[in-house]
Image (cartoon, rainbow, N blue to C red; front, side, top):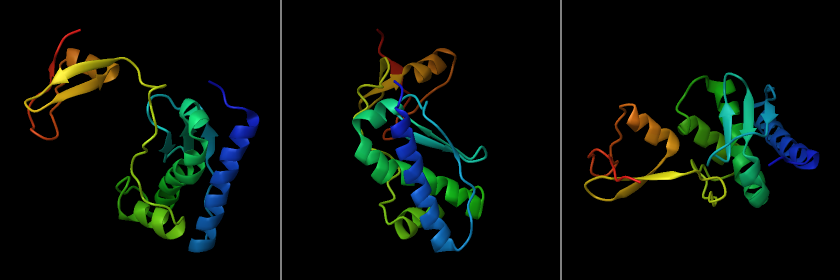
Amino acid sequence: MKLTDQDKKALELQGEDFFIEAECFFDRAFQRPEYLFNQRGKAAGTAHLQRNLIKINPVLFMSNKEEFFEQVIPHEVAHLITFQLYGKVRPHGKQWQYVMETVFKRPALTTHQLDTTDVAGKQFTYRCSCTVHQLTIRRHNKVLKGDRYLCKHCRSNLVFEGE
């Protein structure tokens, strides 16, 4: 799915507004990022710190425009601001939270709650001692090559249930 030039411009302008807010707050200039609109999978967006790049998921944007303007763009801009201010720190650590909550006046949510049905690929069923898990094809292929995944709750190995 391709975004219109108008959508791309609106997203970039929203990012610019947050950069201006950060510049006023910290009384310093920040380098502006490049924007790409080719993020895939379930991620709404990603910030590539060393490349000073923000990637946006066009499929999720089309059905969640308001959430992108209110939360996704400030979330990714906050990553770049945090990196430019503090260097390499925890991705959603106290510095990033400070930028989100104090500078941008947004909740410091680490994940989105968007409906990812339209972007979810084939899932593979795995079982642990306590429940059933759905793994992506990427993780399933890693298991086939010898990687192991543990349940976060019971800490037992995930075992493939079969097709």
